[in-house]
Image 1 (tube, rainbow, N blue to C red):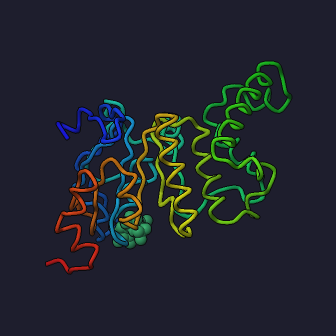
Image 2: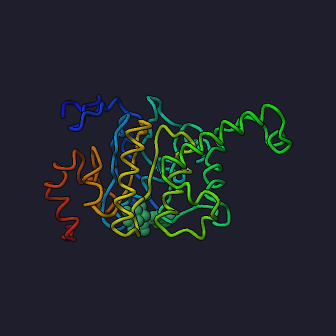
Image 3: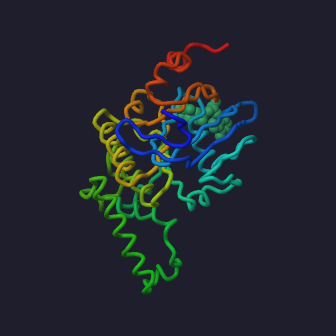
Length: 272
Ligand SMILES: Nc1ncnc2c1ncn2[C@@H]1O[C@H](COP(=O)(O)OP(=O)(O)OP(=O)(O)O)[C@@H](O)[C@H]1O
């Protein structure tokens, strides 16, 4: 892989571009706990980038820095070539960054359709009043949003549950609806927080397939965090490995798999 920060062509022929996101020397502390220590890496246009590591490694903290839930004491976040000032999560969402959560965060009493529709909120231009009163411009916009949502429902093969309240769905399908809601924002960077956690083997295979298809069909850049190293090795273009808040590996899956520090971290070898 030549000079990966300027893009590369994957073994399966996908063209990966320049950096969408760069985190530079990020340090995040909670009192005496150093959750992230001087972490730097990038996410390139069109790639599937995995952030992995054992429990407490700092993976969720990293995602929370990227989407603005946490503000690091040190370091910089660069998005699309510009240094990002501290922003609120909703402002970052408006910049095209969408995410799913480790513990599903859907509106359980609402249907699949309405949950995915709620993901369009950052795209809605007509005011709430005209939306509510169904005025012309709002009506046209509503139709366009519905079309986009129906496309996602077809894509994720969840037509049969479009009117079902999501609280009644099995866990794996709820995760799929959550992916749909994130996709509804047309993200240019999609952050997935342990998308396969708690799933059985079949559900994991389905989710892997959908993640690959989202990347392939929509060209969406994806950064996902995962506890289970095996799951991401097949789908990630590059992997960054965290352990105790430090970066211990960064590169293509095969390289990371052979990294002795990574092997030790996963085997629980203690640190001096
Ligand atoms: N809001 C917080 N307040 C205090 N400490 C925190 C907070 N969030 C995270 N931490 C601490 O930061 C460290 C990293 O936690 P983090 O949740 O980012 O790890 P993780 O890799 O996502 O773990 P897991 O795989 O268990 O979800 C841990 O020691 C954790 O206790």
